[in-house]
Image (cartoon, rainbow, N blue to C red; front, side, top):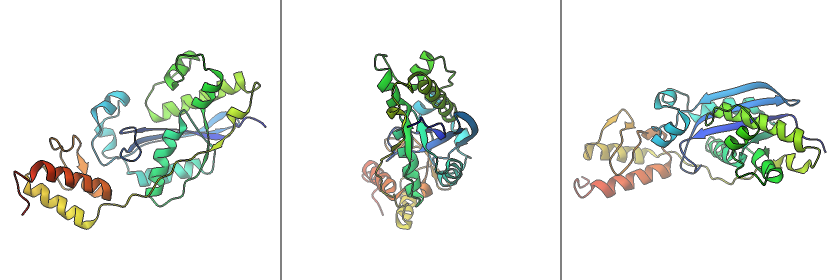
Length: 254
């Protein structure tokens, strides 16, 4: 069985590590044909909340970069069109796939793909290295990398795969074969009109700051600016609970 040379290398940047609670802020991808990069895809994504300081420091992405970017439904449509039915490739690919699948399910889209994980390939052939992170392997193989930006990381994963295929593809082909990607996720329902009404009432009752539907950071509740209209039903419930827990003694709900 030959080593796949047609695929889409994928990488994303997010507000955190948990696809249940965190959001995509950037998608980057490279379409590869016969082992050569043919086209690229890159877009910021508006996460409907301000970015955590640690993410700004890690990626260099600023609130100004994402606040006017399209929301995930629009970016996802563009990415899915770009990627088509191609095999996906990435470094620790299940991380990227889990976020994209979560977004797809929330947008009422089916998203089942096969993929090639360069991290798993590296573990097969480079077990003696002190690390198999993308950054370490790029330094080891002298691959140029501006880390923690989606398109740059996707290009680096593609380049790494080609090097690994050249060095180890004649030793064993099985680690290079696409495998079904598995991540189980349930669709999140959007905030209900009653929840939005209650949140707006609490904001007035507790003298909190907002601009339109954008809630400013609230001490002991959220460090982020939040777009109330983009909350899921569960996120809205958690926010309501936090507000009530922190303020109802001082400001009884009328």
